[in-house]
Image (tube, helix red, strand yellow):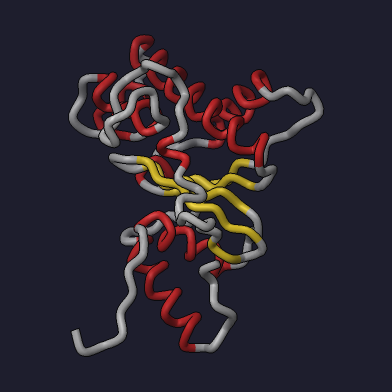
Length: 200
């Protein structure tokens, strides 16, 4: 390739769309697609850490000896909080099929959905005990989450949080097709405009 190029994780690229719009400066970005990914933003900059693994919440262990993860370990957030995991538990092929059952009030599917939200709440709660920041949800899930779902997720976090006064701050990210590609383009535009380097 004769032009300047860069490599970026799709979740980090998507998180950059949130950096660009400047609605949040300190946040954990979770993109929940077939797989789940995380990116940590501090003071408006992506924070990768010394080993470049900061924000990779998908491999935080929720259940020791739990469901297998593609990383080779067991009990990872990925195995419980990705859309792939949700569809596998529900034994359906598409999110449209799953959420149509939710809209119909199917008790079995509602139970699966509430279990999913409880596991996601556990993952978020573990994270905010270490770094108290906004949490932005992106990816395919953002097309289906309702205000009631966000409130329920916040309720589940409050139920397991150690501090009774704590109010979690959960937001939906930008809803757009190809959000990772958009974020990657924003990154290059940012560099072109000669802003500070965003990767630490």
